[in-house]
Amino acid sequence: MEPENKENLEKVNKEQISKITPQAQHELQSPSEFEQKPKAEQTNPGTGYGIAALVFGIISIVFLYYIIISVLSAVLAIVFGFQAVRKGDKGMGKAGLMLGIISVIVTFLLFLFLQVLDVSLFTIPSWYR
Image 1 (cartoon, rainbow, N blue to C red):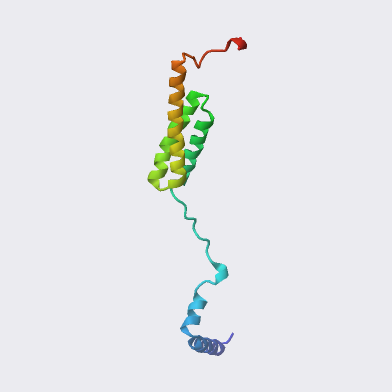
Image 2 (cartoon, rainbow, N blue to C red):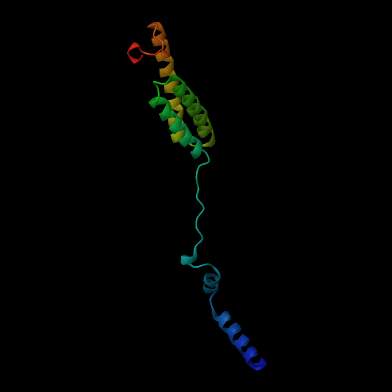
């Protein structure tokens, strides 16, 4: 391309750009609606702890028959529940915390009840021998 044509082209481009309104210039510079960047997910930092508390709370209630599993999962539900509530997950954290506390209380009451009846949980039934 010849130098004269380049100068004329640049002159025409500058004139056309100067005719564009400031709003149109801004729209040309900003990304269009279809080229939007994906939004970052806004999750609560305590959500993982809340889910863990709820899962361990449910496990502790389901396995009340097995005292060791029930107590261990209830303690984990209580710990994760406190962490979830502290980090901001009020719903699942509180639910898991309450399930853990209820499980510990019910397990303790069952243990006392069985001790009063003098029933051993770790004996093999006579029909099984």
